[in-house]
Image 1 (tube, rainbow, N blue to C red):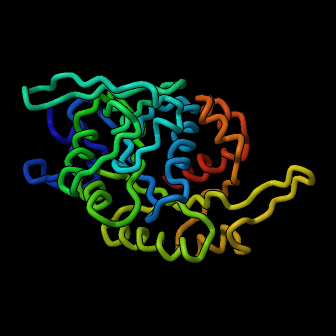
Image 2 (image 1 turned 45 degrees about the vertical axis):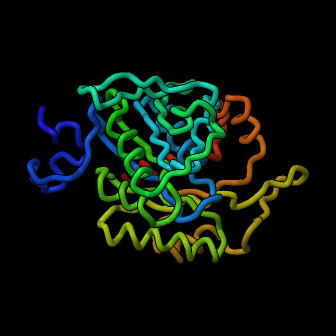
Image 3 (image 1 turned 180 degrees about the vertical axis):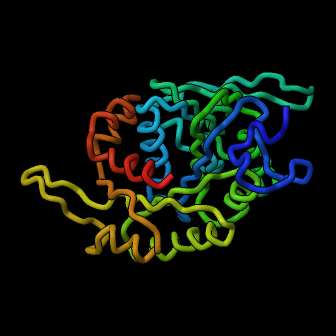
Length: 280
């Protein structure tokens, strides 16, 4: 089998197989790889990843998630699978390992460092080269099977881990997660510029925690800024994919392991998928 056969950029990149340094999965074939980035922590990058994955799965697509935030993995908690553990099998050679991902209630395949450690609270106290090695190994040596979409919940910032993903994994493009604040927009724009410098498509931005809905009158009330999501997206120079509210019920459903059913039941999360699919 050709190395290019398992690559999501097959026929698009122009690279020669014998000189290409892009990694491809050892076990499975992935049609599309989408990164979800923020440039900083605490803006809901993992939430956007989980919502997008859930919505793609609801349309019948085969979906996987690589939890690329090695030092702060949260995807197992999001889907309520944090008590489970991924199996580690022997790989093609004695030195290699094969990871069997944990599946969510609707069949989304998830691999995360928190599914590979004995306890989820166990900290990762590693330097950059080890972190990047673990990240690339989880991508390369997971038994993904046939996937239509692999979403990568990427680490914050523009350092080693983000650079490794953008240089070594054949991304089709990235989705930006942000909150509507000038300070956040300034930091997130660094990621947008980074992607542009590396010729990676930026689909648009999801403005998370943009508002709350009054329980009495039903009106929307901005939380962090009086500026709209459209204004913040314009400052970033990319399309607005969606504005999402602060949703306490979403948090409760995550803790109860019922988040996928909840996301699929609410119309407010449909715009994330609708606008994303229009741009891919």
